Amino acid sequence: MKALSILLASAALLAGCASFEPLRSMRFVDDNNNYLHVDYGRDTKDHESVAVLDNGVRWPFKSKNMVRVELPDGTRFTAYQNLAPTGNLYKTEDGEWEFFESGAGCIVARFSKERSGYVTRFRGTLCATVRNPANVTRERIRSGGATPHGFGRDANGPRDVTNEKK
Image: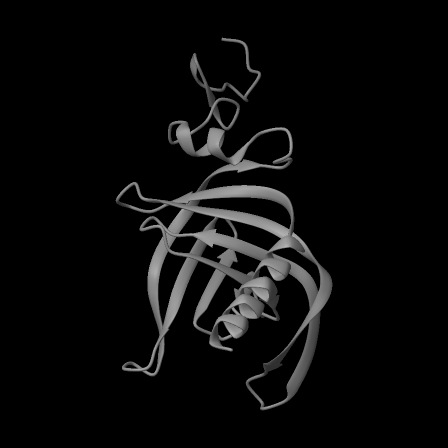
């Protein structure tokens, strides 16, 4: 009986992962040159969450947007978009992890019962993005340097965007 429940739980987990449709990938770097990999995508069904505003009002929110995050230490999680006053906030269903992106930066935090709140595990800045992961594989992004070819620098150094003649 225990084996059957483990098998059913595994099947449910795999079914949830199979519904993820990746749209783009991003890579963030922190001050110590550690990289965070994020795949952005959409689920096939809406995920419902409730945000509680500062005045106590409960605001229901539905979204198909989700992310798959891989931390520098290899820890992975999948999180769903939640309502946030600024930036993009994604949380796991159990609330253990959150990924927050605002502008060119991101923060990954994990809930700590000892501290009664979230503790930052990664804080980084965007360094590469691929808009169509079907044509450019994620492994190619990971194996490149800090700035892959075509993302701000090429073989000749920084791009000249001024178009001024000297």
